[in-house]
Length: 312
Image (cartoon, rainbow, N blue to C red; front, side, top):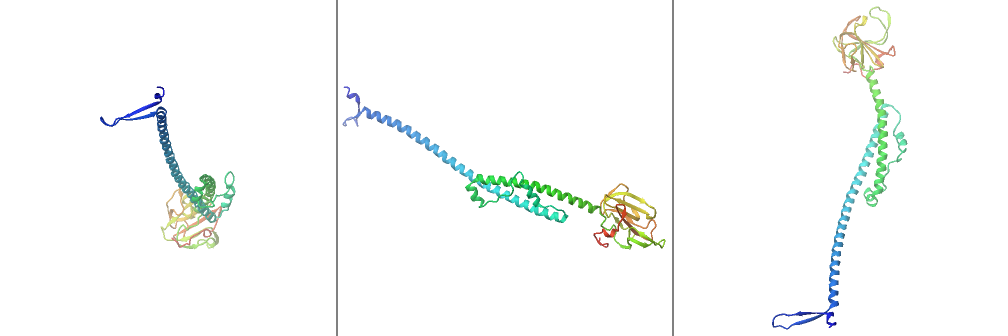
């Protein structure tokens, strides 16, 4: 009886009149199949789970690879932009050198380069192989070099800015000096009397003529030969209607005018119309008496001119 308990009998009846089949299955076999089935279910679940995890990891890897490729392209683009910026600064340095030459001032980019190494990289780092291969091999190294190059170019740009500011300051002074120098003719005509000793047309005696007389038709516009402040505008003894303009470098006097178009205290620009040719005061005919003063002494205006008398 105890032996039968170790077996199970499976009865198969095909139909009502068919033969009955009995299959005797040992209990341990059925138990083993059950355990095996349960283990198989767990194994299948584990496999499915692992497969899903693996698939997710593959997707993550593919995503990371895609991101890496995008980042590599951005690194290459950044490296190229930094290199273009370097070329721009180099062109700016060349322009500055030409400006210094034109302005006649010393100093150049060598002084800038000597100071660049202080507190930062001493020179711009060039890649010893194509940037694409370098990025693929070691992106972090490329990024580090790009950062060093950016630091270098930042310092270079700061020094270049200061250097160009120096050039700008000098050019502004030169511009101001040019605008303040009486080097254009106030009126165009012909010189009837130059600067120096001459025979006075009224006394017949030799005297120092401290100006030039430019003959021009009555009413011809008279322009300021230099910028400055009008310190006198009106009648002045033998000079007749007169305008005097002064800046920190020169003083100019315009005499024998027929009309005065500015007033005392006005600031006039170089080339601005300030009056009209006339023959007021002690004069033999329509002309402009033009004097130039420098540090309390008269100078020959013709030595300052940068244009021919007949230009317009």
